[in-house]
Length: 333
Image (cartoon, rainbow, N blue to C red; front, side, top):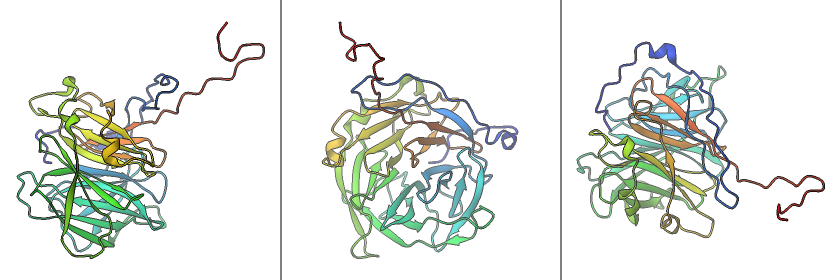
């Protein structure tokens, strides 16, 4: 989505990659699901040409690498970043164009790491079909940088079963071989699904409705509501590598849904999510991208040149400390 304001950051290159200290937070109560610590800034996005970031994904090939893409009107490039926003290189995606790239997902399929580029933006709801490009995750050169070109291993042409939709949230559940897409401007937002690897490559696929997200109409941090952010529209989506959790980023907050192996996503999303507060508007003015890393931490950032990269660390479930010698373990008289 195009930025609705101009971010003026004098000397932003000189401010790149400045780490920030963690914000301590208490452990959740015993028996409660572990949550996430408050977001902390870990650096600034230093890639000079990455000024309209619309998708973020953590590498499934190696630690310490994030991938990002730009919004519409930009070159079809994939950007590699360090965990503090350092520029590690960029590659051209061969044979495709950036009509309106709106999200990026990483996944492993048949023991190989891939990135899924989601060319699904459709602000006016006019595109008869949209595209998903599955790209083998690139390997760095001997100098540790990423350059050159990479071709999609396969692409998916799709249409929605109930007509064109704007979408900025796309994620892959490789455990079940599905791509999930979340509509943006419908009320309520709607999840759709399509096979990750269609049985007939090249044939137009139909994205089927999975579930309506009525809860998104009811949530939203009023402190982040402005004339520029009137609704908690979803702008990004990701699924944890083990398929056990999903995060939805909106303009006002992030919503975390957990799923066990016996549940479907429709079942999991019928329950209330954990709400993760976002940094203030002056720090994260237009949240557009979020991703789980391999340690289940969350990275997120805003559109705009030199935007701050934030990290939310996953909390570990509380465990009762062992009783000292002579102390009753239960703590009861």
